[in-house]
Image 1 (tube, rainbow, N blue to C red):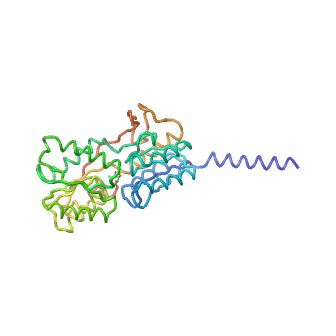
Image 2 (cartoon, rainbow, N blue to C red):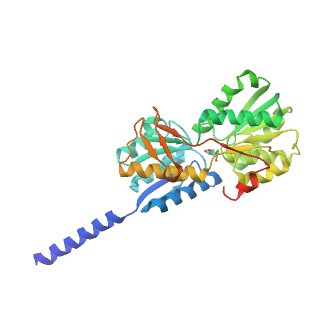
Length: 330
Ligand code: RAM
């Protein structure tokens, strides 16, 4: 009687081994909120990397609204699902740290991309571009649209968003330079990366600042909503919108004249690179120490700085000459 039981056990063990040997690595891409075209494009790149690297399953997820609470709930469930890696664009630099630490204690490799968490909550952060370059670009595009003088307001994403807050600080540093002394930042408002709230905040700015000349929205959701509000309120030509946007969502607004130029990096490459980086933490090739080189596959290689952050390429500027061409990609 012993033999059949032993044989059965051996079969079971072999099956379990085969399953674990061939089971795909689960990498979760946790975004600020679902329904945002920027993150859908990042997911497209994430899927491309998974296909290229093989044996990877991407779990694309995020809360309905861009809140840290929503992301904490999702991360707890990803821990329970035993994913191998979490890639997060954070709604708050601090609030997510405890739950991400818990994930790392369970062996899950955590990296942030786009919008970071504090160093202790992740192994690496991948910036889409240099933060100071982004701040400078936003101010330069504003000056190109309205000239050297005038009231300017910022329409941001959420008040706690790590990336937007850093970019706004960088903008303020540039605005403090003598070359930009005529540009007056009168207000910063938050549309929470929701189209309707962003639209209402833009309308609020029109009322509160009748002399406003520019709205700078460092968010793809905010810039499209602000441009629509400018068109609807027939302010094209007197009030300009600029910031960070997707060519596919902005082409019509450039055509209408509400927007002269805007910038962005390639969100597909950003998603691809994040998954590529995560896969190297899973395989143990990279540990997350300063000075380490991290391959981003076909996109290139980055080196982790003292804060274990790395940055990709410069933001690219779009206007009437090129927006249509890129609108079919993202
Ligand atoms: C929105 C999000 C994202 C940001 C882009 C520019 O889609 O806030 O985090 O990087 O805009």
